[in-house]
Image (cartoon, rainbow, N blue to C red; front, side, top):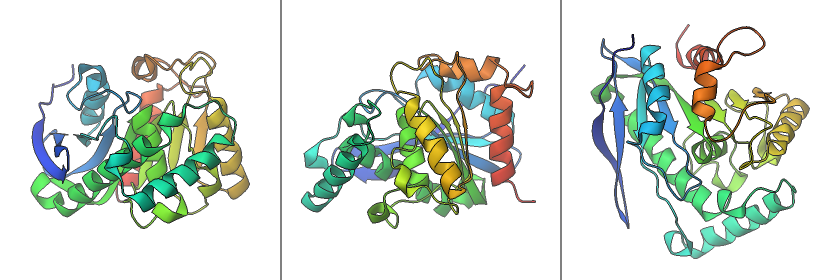
Length: 265
């Protein structure tokens, strides 16, 4: 039976709308590799303390990781960015629209950008405060669901104009989300594992199929799995209880991926 890890809340950034905090789940025993967890909610809802993602967070802790679950701003709009950034966001979002995936624009416009800003600042904070947080300073992985995964994938493969602006995780696991800027996929990007089911009725899996095609074309370190029965709502339970083709639970494959790319050899 897993030991339940209680979080410690820590402020990591300030915004016009207030303070951003993260919940740090630490299993003890000295420095641990860190996973930044991006929760879902379509950039309109969700919270770092929500019960829905607790089983995944606790499973990551049981595997030996510390887990940080940061706030990110929701329902942001034009007043949350400057005029030049808004122009950039609009131009880039127009290009995403032309991919023809049927993805709702609010999932890749201003709300995506501000979520990336906040998650990027959380990454920088954790790296800067690694000793105080008792986390291994070398590499940090990320695990994202839906909107949190869209933001994490964007940190891994951002539009060129944002590349210097955002911090980047060293490895990523993404549930129910593609790389929405596939023209930015490159061979030297972070290792990314995507699971996106054909039964997803919220974020079309065709977008992740396009991610897989772009990854093959550029020899990028991205693997995409499209289970025929995986949903959007309930994807956390799915990966905790279902097995892949290798006979291993999906969550164990994901933990292996994160461990391989965040633990020194």
